[in-house]
Image 1 (tube, rainbow, N blue to C red):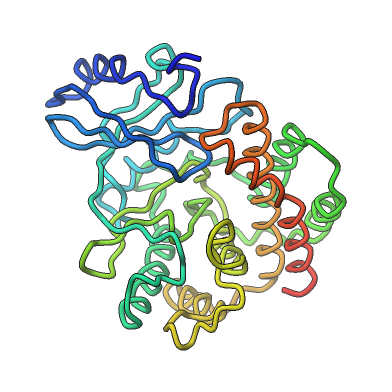
Image 2 (cartoon, helix red, strand yellow):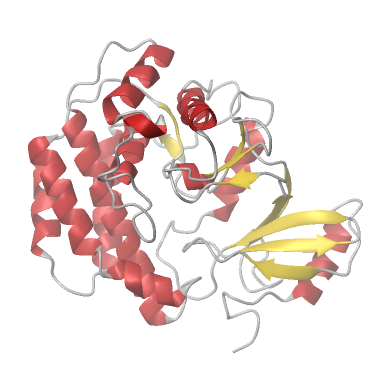
Length: 345
């Protein structure tokens, strides 16, 4: 297997030659280090004489339609420069698959803190509360972006976001399906039968908003960059908000990276209700009806995502095959959690 077909490797000579021709001020040679986290688009740190960069590429090999859209990631983060949404600086996009076997882009390497565990054991109580509040602020800022002003009004189609997303992820799930799972079938049917009427909200949505996809200043409890915009689109904001709550309902540590069973009060971590209330306050919203639907939807979509990761791992195209196979064992669990959210809120 050569470097152009192995998602864990990078043809640094090819990247260096391309960047020399396309990135002003770039100087090689390149030392590339793959980031261990992340299942979708392989990501590498590039150390060079001209500075440090991050390269994010599509995985090589046969991919599901519309998946791994690094060109969309590049576009949305470029558009958000100068807004209230913190993003890394985008440098250049390579759309020529022949260079390293798949499309890639180069962005700024942000020197910051990244928190994997939402319990934030690394910080004290005061800072922990401020970090969660800034997470809330950034989420509201994403949904308040003027999509016309930043040139993103065509970044997603018109129409009912949830109808579109449920159709898309059902198709993606079917394309990656490895066995019939009764909870997933029931959840797909429930979502189709309980879809709220379109309320006209049409905003930028991140699609995978959680604390480990954020970078924070090394000294201040302030987000300096939101990462991993692969699932971003123009859609309905409550999907992002529900995704935060979904993550917190997972088990702490390891695979779950959640807050289930954690006594949040002594840690100065907001409850689900407090986080939602603060978000509503920031966006001038009195309440969110049908929140159980939005929460069930996020579990459904995550089940679809990890089924795709699992299938790529089986096919040898996953960024981290061992983790991909381990994640695949949880598809039915996510579907079951979605059913519980649907019925209990």
